[in-house]
Length: 400
Ligand SMILES: Cc1cc2nc3c(=O)[nH]c(=O)nc-3n(C[C@H](O)[C@H](O)[C@H](O)COP(=O)(O)OP(=O)(O)OC[C@H]3O[C@@H](n4cnc5c(N)ncnc54)[C@H](O)[C@@H]3O)c2cc1C
Image (tube, rainbow, N blue to C red; front, side):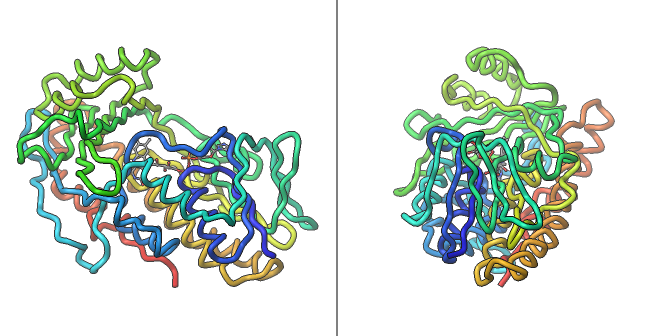
């Protein structure tokens, strides 16, 4: 039987392990954590990410856990519109799915359910080494045991130990931003007037605040998700102090920013340094014996979150890999599929990384002139950069 080892049980690893096992592969999933668990935040699924999940598992029940993403527009901190919201149609111009928002814990539950009982999960296994060579199958080791398989998938995130061994040129570096995320659960979320309930985005000088209602659904967790971004280094203080700082930084911003920060508790807060890979790995596929290794998700192309595309691209990676290896056997066919994976994914992800970097400059804009230029340009930039349904980042369809 064809065998795969997937390293990392984040969104990328779970989606890939489920996809491969449904295609008849025997999969072992290695996770360094003691359990598979999601951070208590949320995620935007753009049409490309939704299509990829549907391709990976048409019976995944994704629609039941996802709430439609309202277009809340873009404002300045004083509340003035930079981009007026447009009502989103049900579906996009191409007849595909609309953007949606999902609580991360719901998404993980669905991905774990999709593993069925065919995937062997080994938690508490931190991979430290990788071995490839012409004459043998690829293998990873945790210092005690080597795990070898026909196909090895590195889905171990931005600090990937597997990538370090195969593509040391790609370094994880700070992007010059810190981010804070939180979900205010439904029962203590502030009641917002209709004109604010759709959430939206606000751009200040070096600061950005985005809020999205998670909706009240029968399946899935409700509440309000927000993410704040500030140019600069991450803060070293404990969460309660960081929350107090956020309330001060955003004190003069239009509502509902203040109301949302007031309703947030320190234990809701997830502070993070925003990091990215620079440069991207030269290749995403490495042959070894009858198969090889592929890099996938943040292990291959971690980028800042400004376009909200990291996980969506990871699902694209997983869907592409699954379609390429679904019907192939270890040997020349599998080696060719590994090469094809790199050829399909590297240009695509490089292009989204490039768009994300342009968006970094927009978020980072400071100074009167820079801000004026940004505000004037935003109406043209936003549809192009922010991946509206017809935007390039979200415009992807799974391979047949
Ligand atoms: C503020 C913010 C907002 C974002 N918003 C969005 C959004 O709206 N939409 C979107 O698509 N993306 C978004 N992203 C990006 C998205 O969160 C990431 O792209 C995604 O989490 C990457 O998933 P992954 O599985 O590749 O990596 P990770 O989530 O990092 O998972 C890696 C897994 O591998 C395990 N692991 C690591 N090292 C080892 C090892 N040596 N051995 C074994 N296991 C290991 C880890 O424990 C973890 O479980 C956002 C990111 C940020 C920071």
